[in-house]
Image (cartoon, rainbow, N blue to C red; front, top):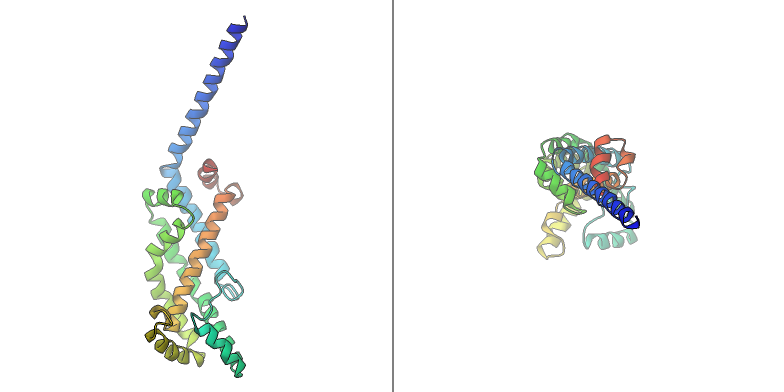
Length: 232
């Protein structure tokens, strides 16, 4: 009698194990194809839209230490010396204008970011899903850095040209670059700010996407809950 009960319990246990394995296999299958692609697209579009909204407003860059744009390299130290000679307000004005330029430029990138998401393939989605913490940054940088840079540069140029110290920065930075003290790409303030604007934008998009991964149910999207919930 006991042996028969043991056999029955073992059979039930095996059956439950088989059902669990089947459900697990189905969830993997589901998130490896259309659902995975759709879930990633929704997550990235939400992340990109949220990042643009956070950064493309007053103090979006200037008030956020994670993305605030400083003077590059040794010029940051030179700026400290300038403050001792009474030129501190001009330095502060330049740094403020750099960050305000980034804040003004970022909203122009929304359509390009969303377009990149909509054009992604299933393979792109799977790579992002399993590609680690920087997979989102790499995806957007590969697809949008050049065209976004072209869009941002004129906006940044107009904003920084209003500050007289900007041209002095370019003159000093150009000489410093020749001596290897500043990277060549940082020797022009307009291009430097444009690059830092993009870095900050991709950083915040990645953070927003990670929030969705960590709390897919809280995103309010059924497809996100299904895809990212299955990975938890």
